[in-house]
Length: 433
Image (tube, rainbow, N blue to C red):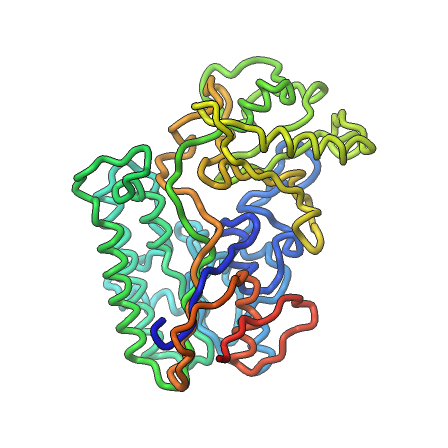
């Protein structure tokens, strides 16, 4: 940062891992990509969903564009690189890789990593089970995963030629979600003086040290970028989206669930239901439209007015204290250049990401401090980071104006001397001062 440039990097909308990394590395927004989260509606039915793996990415990402210009890439841990595909170079896939699945290209690389790390399956794509109350175990697993990742990166530097090298360390994300409350006095679950109060700080120090060892190996012809796909913040609680819709008379059940149940296991009276929502770091809200959904009841002509009414109702939501949450609701057609596949009718950020969306029913309240998918301390936030460093020239340690992560793709291509495809509509980040 002292001799480079840096600043806040605005995430995609929504600011979540899938689709943010693919948006960053293709220069396309989530609507153009055609997926709006990890799980997406597969069709206009009420229950079928598809998982946005790497097979869902139908556009070229940076390494595929560079390959057309003769460049060789090493890609490690980049989300949505499973299932692995052939490329001009090497790929180790991401946290979305199922246990036991093939995770390297070429395939023989997996055996070499087993040998390098001293055990079969020693490479860790993720900390499985990171949503846990056993925080010391989680911390140990994060360090183990990161240590093995960096050992692998050094091995690849030793053994593979490359023009473009990219690695994503998942430990930063996992330590935020697992341990944010230990460090942040503003977190509802913070306990002053807890034994893990410095755990996140100490992990960052460790990670900086590992990055420093990599930087020491690079020549003066290598430009370095440090990027993140989104930010993080304390999770203040959960807003039970479907409990709220039920209380508002917009979601009608045939019978109440016996206990806490995911929406897909609850008997819904679709003939009386106008809207339903999904859980996650933000809410995807869908309307029950005549001619689109099997039992749709909202006339298409009424859809624009209903959408505006729902935006107003969501933005009027309050917290347990009766004060406005500061919720933001957005329509996809107001955000994206196009909307492929089946977008949500609204994207809703409760408390502008201070509160998680909880999709389950049977909770009996609109607000909760519990997460229906397991313990989680942090929500995502809008701004990540961007740092650029060129050892051949001082960029002056200057802060950059606002940037958006789609700009990373044309920036990389410009640095690599590759033309930017005409269908990428965002400019490169200006690095010349």
